[in-house]
Image 1: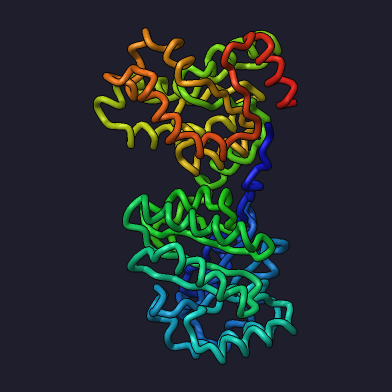
Image 2: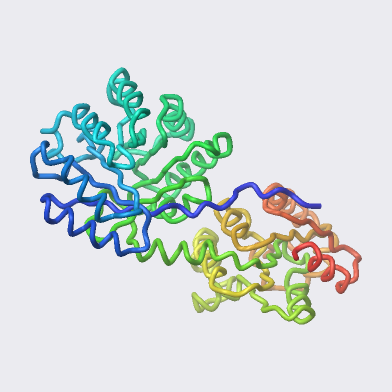
Length: 413
């Protein structure tokens, strides 16, 4: 049984902000950006200490320096986190000048501004080289999923060429909400480009992994950040190089006792590819056994380490990978794994699992509950996540192990 992959991977374009106050500094930043392995630069006009009449000339020089790299020009208002310095420019007259010059690749327009003027600028841009990014920012809180989706819909409905939303995350749940909302919107509107991110320290996952949910641009810094939580260009590139390496792994998932470890070893020996065990990677990284991490730091800490360690799969040649039983309970883990290869779900009945592992005392989730009924309950809870992750599903009850290994190999070529 095979499933279509839910999320075609998106390696986001990397955009670096230019935040110098003076003309000389702006051009110096652009020269550094031109030499980096990034895709875009954003000139933040609200930092600019020069005169508004100088703006077209600066844009022209920036385009000359950046070459093929795209240029976004943004006048961020103080209402949405911009510098007070920018309030001295007339917002829509400045936007109009940028559009009419037609040299910037994109101009950012805030969706909360006057709707009639917003529409006027979009119509004007449709006759120009410059495209419009319809943006929304909240530096105080993370709204609910519906609100995020509605703002992206507004950008699309207004005729913008891209939608952008950035909101403050106080917790990892806030960041997760931005990712989930991004995935929701992208699933229904794949042809409309969006850039989404959660600001603040907990929002780092959105800046590194937003592309797995459909965001097409992430903002990274080479110096001073233009928003809280921006990661360095070096960190983003390092993560992307791992995440989108396409090693073509055979990835085995499933509940404990379904045969992942046994089959991983056999496939490795039989077909001459390396074997990787994600739990062993965690033990090596932390210096602790899995049961120790659960006992001393809790399951949440273990799951966080597990999510982080998955990036390292992008550093290995094609291998057979055995994942922990709970790995795919996190949506972000599923999306990462789908980038690395074909996910094979191994299944077994609760009775089979109990028979295979009932003497094993190294299973923290079954401590004190080593019985068929409890195993069945956990399987039922995990079944939706397992099946959503799977590209291939193979039952291992009462089957020859060699036969299963051959079937996995044939279905993952």
